[in-house]
Amino acid sequence: MARCALRLAPEAWPFAVRHADEIAEYWEQQRSVSPKLYDGVVHLLRTCMFEHNVFTATLLRSDFKSFLYWRALGYPEAGVRDGFGSVVIRSAEGHVLLGRQTAGNVNQGLAYPPGGFIDERDVRAGVVDIDAGTARELHEETGMMPDEFARAPGYLVTTSGPHVSIAVEWRSALPSDALKAHILNYVRRQPEAELADVVIVRSRSDIDAHTMPGYATVLLSALLAA
Image (cartoon, rainbow, N blue to C red; front, side, top):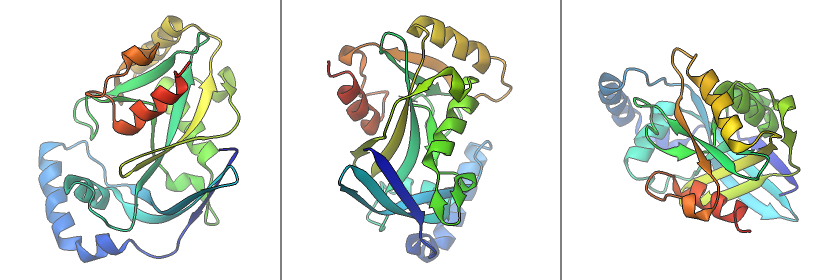
């Protein structure tokens, strides 16, 4: 996609309103098991459209506990999809680097492009700045600054089941092994790092559907098609 146009809708998520009591009960159960969980603001895709090389979407503001309950139910039809920003890190050879999430987090053990929910810091006057969000995620999860990379033009939008990943590709001049070592050196200095490891995907044969979410395998297959 050449451009993304993402706007925030003013209404609440009806699913979260209808199931408020069940959500509160489920959240307490999950917090007792995983005290690190934090109930922050999340934004979910209500509508999306691909037209004339532009990805257009509207989002609803909700909270993490409501999202987590919806996910636990298997993502039933609720008028939204799980939309989020992703960071595609490419090495000098064209390899893709993924992060494997630490234990105790919602995606523990899975390897996927760094990223996360669309943050309220990236919503200004009802408009979502996905570029700012992915640039921040790049720095927070790798310790590297966006100006250490070359930003590829456009956006890589991947859909898989209930998930919609809006990715920006960042290209490094470093080879993949050196880039991995640099990121892990940063991660190991963090007291509560989100990443347990960095996974280098050099070719399609490295794609593992058992440890990588569906949207990530679709994205990687397209990126490594050559």
